[in-house]
Image 1 (spheres, helix red, strand yellow):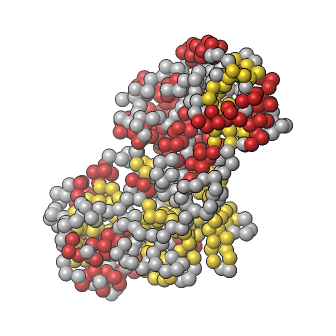
Image 2 (cartoon, each protein chain N blue to C red; image 1 turned 60 degrees about the vertical axis):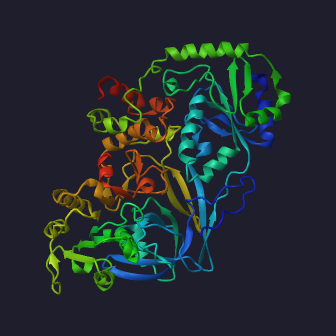
Image 3 (spheres, rainbow over the protein chains, first blue to last red; image 1 turned 135 degrees about the vertical axis):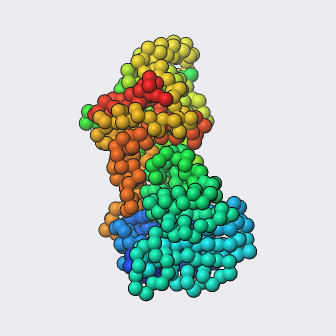
Length: 288
Length: 341
């Protein structure tokens, strides 16, 4: 938990500022794909740095290199650590990929809202649709729902990536999720590949083949083009925008709605998001 | 009501500065800006508008947030010290005081920004009425009465006499400290001055701009207007408007390697810059039109929608004076007044 701010005799009552991070220890690094690694982070004395809810994010900082917002991919039901699945695509992520277990990073958070796992999603059949690295934010929700299995109905997970090598969390998907009763995992890759006997094709077309009924709430995350066509498919299947959730991602610096970067319309994605229902997304100016 | 002769102001400054830090408009290298008063400083309370607003006394252009040291291979995070010395801002104008109210909405809302909050707690505002409002002023449009600004103490400079009226507990405390330099007086000269100022304000060219097309309801309506394409073209994306603005609060967080660790600091940033929203996977505001639109939509529609109708413009007119493309918020308001949906 957060330690109190250092003494300030003229300013009693001030808490440690949210912009000041905590030191976290990387206790494990898993290579998921050629460009995605999952980092396990714990407090220096062991245990989690803070509590979070599924869908929330945290600022991860390598001092002297940079700081960026990442979704927390582990479920809050995990009592011991938090995990971040991070794709190598810039200066900071390149650096993070060079780190080793035992190295320190700075973390502050959690930030943002969360998927309504204890309210709107409770008791519902759930349809998760993800592409590529976008499984990262959904994995937190999926594992939360699986750890509280009795609170949710059937769970379908449609997940696709460029190739079989680009599927994130493949081991957990195949060895854990696929074996839980009432959970159906539908994997697909963009192009045929040796050793792959699963579905081949883009996520939107696979979604249409699967032809789900509308008695479920959908949670959709992925690259913009995938979102666009999946949303179109869901509409054709009869889904209302009120039953489809997604997360938005914009540049962020502060994480608390003050630095101005992720402002879109009257919302700040860091504070009012990242989780939005599509009827809420439709009300935003088209700038995301 | 108290008064002090202008020739005695230096003694007043010295009395305030004896205990507290004193910031006031200071002339340096041909420009007047808020600066720390010293015996050598050339105070200038006659110039109406400092080049930059008083914003950076409370929200500095650059300030340290924390330091990261490595000790025996371990990172050690040390938060920057918060402002702990009381200070006085002398000669802040009504528009800039209103600007502080706008910044308060941002920085004092949860989670409170402790760096800003500490300065607000330590700072006393000695506001000054605007004896000679200028043609680029339009604070009246945003509900500022520059004849009687908000503040802990209000002052009026009439001829060679400065009138002084404490308005808050902080203002009373400051007045008590310098009481031996002040002389009790009645309010008649000030009342006459207020009437003079308000008469000038009525006649200013931008004093009667209409905000009917703006406010919370404009958040949906004005975004898709074709006017933005026509309005933005002279914009050079220099960011001057955001830097002189008393309400612009966008900031960046950056690193500085001190050789003995890493200093993490924040500094003003500008939504006018092309890399402001740049991400690894692209930029959600690719064109200058979009960035230009964002600035005005934020000030005149999004901010009021989130803050009970309060606009994030105070009509100080600095952007009107300083924009190299002669673009400004007045042109935007007028364009929508005429043709807006």
